[in-house]
Length: 250
Image 1 (cartoon, rainbow, N blue to C red):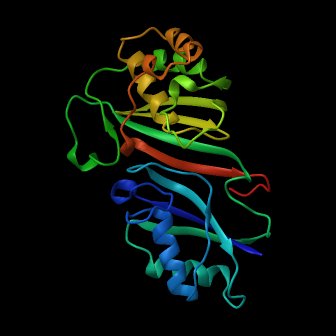
Image 2 (cartoon, helix red, strand yellow; image 1 turned 135 degrees about the vertical axis):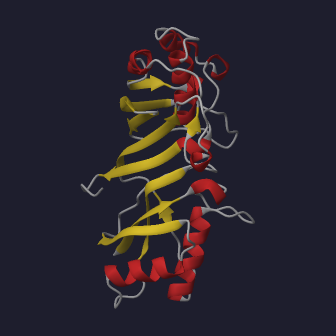
């Protein structure tokens, strides 16, 4: 049997989610905390990778159940008593031995927040992308439709020499909503490539600002050239919002 946990974190002080030696990461903090609880090394698996500065409302990790006497409530309380202040475990449940949050995920939802206002709000500095110029949400929505479906997203992938995955990805839906001075870009897909969501947002902002016509996004897809798309949106506006799994867990 395995233990699955939902963890939320403020990504500002993390060098990403995946474990790396000599830098502070989400998985590194989880591993250290579990080792304190169980007095042994604990291997963890995570549902997805987030870059440095990216936040999460709903990251999922799992590990083998070690202490059979500990309940789900016990494990949650133990984790939250020892984790750093920029991390919190929201939920814990027992699941099957075959559960792996990465391979069992069927949908991952990311949300990107833009503070679209002429004046900066310093209290939102590490939580949203401040964009002071007018943005046309209707044009951004029109452009986003070209990105929905199964496409080669080469133009929206930041190259990584260690990543040889296929650039073909399935995006179920992109929603763009204006809420007062904020614009929310919500991307729903099965899986993503490096900085793909942030590159999509950067491109949609170019459309919203009037630099590009919405139909140009279709051309960007077809050109398969990262240099043709918009600049990468800042990490601090992005949140891993929700993950759904094959067994119905979410």
